[in-house]
Image (tube, helix red, strand yellow):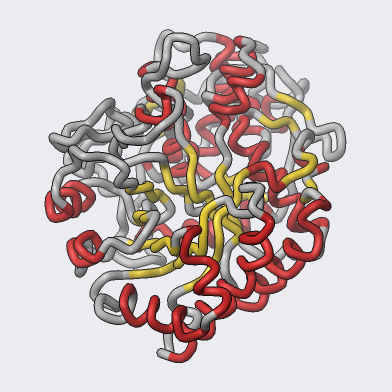
Length: 468
């Protein structure tokens, strides 16, 4: 079997605590971007009803459209507002403008509309506009003071969104570091975020990484598909997907400048299902694979190697196509839903449809009645029939690499024989399922696993069933 990479023994303590406290709202980390550069979008009320039918817990707006904010009232959906780049000078130079912005865009709707975050500008540091770069921190500070003045400090956070280009180094992830060109500005921003408990919001796009390196192995790495993985030379951690690698590069950059306590939010990530004929990567198959596997990865709550046991808030891009956006065709091809409210492709976001993550347990509730009481699932998690050895090896590496005790399938262990990828993967997958909480999403493995009531134990090899 492949030698697994191991994480800290404290992993499962953190993992189980997180599960017990957060299972009740286990989809809250899935958000979506709601752009409006289009002339064919459905009315906000229809969109609000659509969102309520899904497991999407948060919506990010690029502005502060009152019709949308009103439509989302009393839904419980978290709302992220955006102050436009054009508003940054006024926000920075006039505290009263910042107060008026809050008075106009937040106070009339809060708390019925669950406004949780305001992003001051979008990708300003890498915009090339040095005038705006120097104003971003004063703008955020004035917005924070305005929020504090109406007793919403700590309830409505203030941040700004960055592209991955704020990193000077990102490969391997452990070498992640901020571009020194942003020097004092980044230092000030991070000090602000640390002091206010606000998140560092970033836009990682494995799609762009694949475009710059369109090899088949890179495509698989970006789409969470079977691949050999990439070992971080600094930590010796094997990364199995680009999303984790990119997010952990940001984590490393934050840690390296003394801000381990600043949390990360993924403000945008996605994959286009269509594009121009000369573009590398856009396709319905790729988009479904990326977004579907990303959601399964988030629902597993495995986290990233540097942030185990936690799924960070991740906003998919995007709710609808924006047919008026300029640029390459792919810019108008990210929508998960069509203007008629039907799905562009199914990635198991609907509450009413049976999701692929629970293929054999359609009536099993995924939400307990209290945060500390999880439903006990019976049975064992095993691979589905017909799964390739390559995928099974990926599952094996994944399970043994996230804190599972795989000693039983090491040489001399009770379950080492038969020494096959299929046998070892089945044992490891079940063990991760049992120890991670026995929730339906723990038996997913990119839709290659299923639950069975038939005990797969044999001879001296015992597959745990979670009963003890």
